[in-house]
Length: 542
Image (tube, rainbow, N blue to C red; front, side, top):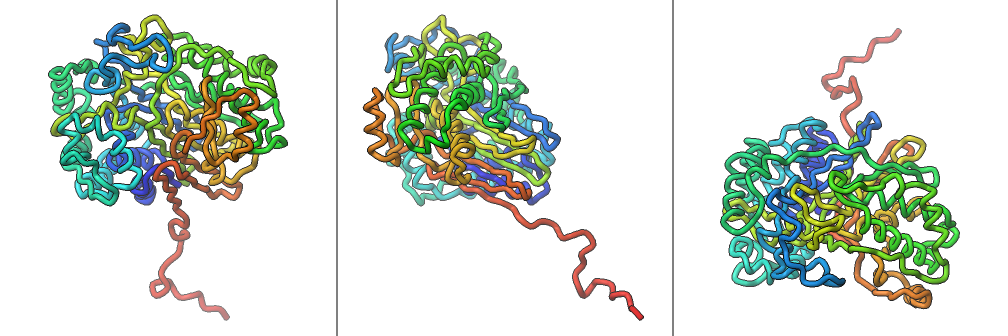
């Protein structure tokens, strides 16, 4: 089963499985294809995390997140304000747009390391679908066209990226055939020469020379120093299920477990999905999680993150005791991040029992919103995730990895996989992942229902509530002190796989992106089967 946020990416993953590859091969093929067909969300100049459960039961997280270049400094930007809502903004949007917003990318190294360590197929094999679609072209979906339109004003400022997405000053429309000749050549070079051509070879020199000319910070030394870090997932339990998620510098796993621990003390099934009581509790645990995230969750190489305390049942008991069931309260959030919602996620499972849940991004929509000439590469703008004010947990430091809300999650029941899921959505990721787990375990939804069900979110201010929630529930929340903000959607397109007791799998993608699930049934002929005309005659019986 392969579930991604574009049909061509899901097909690329399925193609690898059909060719004898495993879940890792399929996930990497899908991700490379997404850099072509979902270019606003993911690219080889980004960062991300992959949660892998091997067939033998091992869990590991490969951290390929971006990091601040070695030339970066805590005071390198001029903040606009010391207060929200403009706390993370800087003069000239230098941390959001252009070369100075680009962090050292870990994506390509992470994907290639995963393939070498755990895959079966070659890099050239898994990259072939991406190269094919870039060279031949693909049809722009309404979703991609809307994203181009949203970012068009900034894209038009860079001639190279404008040439592809806003030719003649107009965003390309749905149905347009998008051909990426330069990017196809870049991918072909990587497929032939390997990731070293990017991290220390001729392609890397093109990148760093351009950065040096345009005020960027990423140097050749930064690229050569990029390493994928293997991390141990965080682990907890919820109503008899085992929950595994990514550790810091991801906030996702820690705070999903923290919120589930608090919610375990309530009868959510009895309260019911979409009831004002359930929605109020979800909002409160989100506020608690974000208060702790702001104060404590960052790159563990730079900040001592109290993981054990945050995911302890006793700590959840203490926090739960302070929740008022009838009124919202202020949990005192500190520094609030401005993490982008523009990301992608793939979830893959193979017949051998390997599972991959991987969340990857170039951060904002179209990253730094420029393209390195002649390469087709759109760099990330990950520097915008750092606090531009010195002296805080999320402040800039040379080599420091960004903090993310990615939450590629694998859940077990009695030692066997029950479901795996993840989604894009920036700060809204781990709250949405938590709600999907509650939907599956407490509300006993089907997988499709769980990923598509209405969501809510807050980090301490307004309570964002998807418009599918009924008006009476929203009004009842307002009566409890919430400032309710109806929104079209919370977070992005979730991709999930459920593992059924009979050994089959179910895949689901939701309406919030171009999601497609592709399953492969059947299989090879039974051993000894031969075509009838060539089969030996039946033994004569007497």
